[in-house]
Image: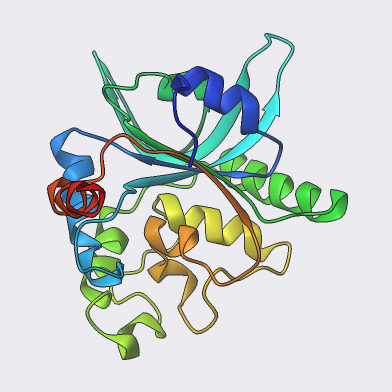
Amino acid sequence: MTAGLSNADFIEQHAAPGRIGLCGGRDWINKLIRKAQAPLTADGHRSLWSHAFLFSERRSDGHWWVVESDLDVRYRQVRLGVQENRAARYFDAEAFPNLAILDFHLDARQTRQVQVAALDLLSGLSSYSLSELAGTLLAMHSTRLRGRSNLLAQEGALYCSAMVQHCYAAAGIEFLPGVHGKNVAPHDIDDSPLPHASHRLIRDLGMSRLRRAVKALG
């Protein structure tokens, strides 16, 4: 687990085309998503993660860019769905205290397949699906439902981690065999049994984990 780095330095150190980014935010929406994933965690407490995205490439502007399906609400502007953004949006450590970059050891062919799938979604203007997200949250409490199609699935719509799974499926990779792609949560990707390197920058463990850590040190 990386410590002592800024978010910007962490991303600069570990970003690469096709790698997966995870973040855990502090606003109420991110906290709600983290808490809702408690059934998936080993200790039954909230997940470290609320959002997943793909690293695309470093552009001529010198910045790393990411492809993600998100709700982006700004002054007089709302973007819903698959979009491209600079990774700099995750530089704010107060807003995003937890970051991870996952390396599933893609070869050059697989990296290209993932990138092409992401660009196809981007060009097709795939939308963000709140209903699918709700369907995934419901399915977390049932192994049977997790293996079935999302109960609230919508054509042409993907939430964040389902988008990442969709793109990796183009390279023949399923993060959790037996779990339907539109039921994959951010925590599932980090918890995948597939071989991968997980680089982490964690500042918000949650009070329950923090108490246990302090107790262990004492």
